Length: 161
Image (spheres, rainbow, N blue to C red):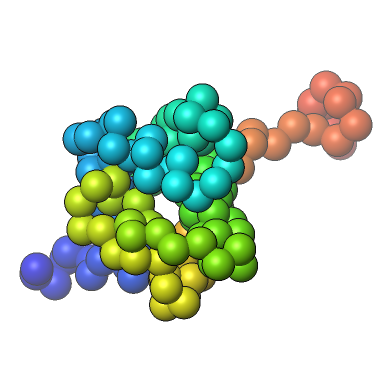
């Protein structure tokens, strides 16, 4: 870095880290899709069809959020950050309901069948951190401003003095 190159902003680094995390999660889940559906089914949401829909929604959200967070378009980044919040919230709700019901899960499923960890109380803290990061990035990712229009929809008039 030289004197003319600005230092990267912390929020940019956080946004890219969240995008990388979401991409890694989706890649791990897609690498063994049937295994991931089985993991989602272990949360006790309903049958295999419901688990399949939930798994597909999680993966789609993770991919969409990761792709949008690396976009140069401010509005797309903001929308992607909103999707990231929804994904983090969904994972948190899954974990909290399973933990509250006393379910013994061998793999929380964040990375599919890979890097599995049992559902324990600290997974709830990890989910809270995930949600907080996504929320923070969303709060600091401002959508592009809409072009301003003249007041009350009246056409612009030149003022003659």
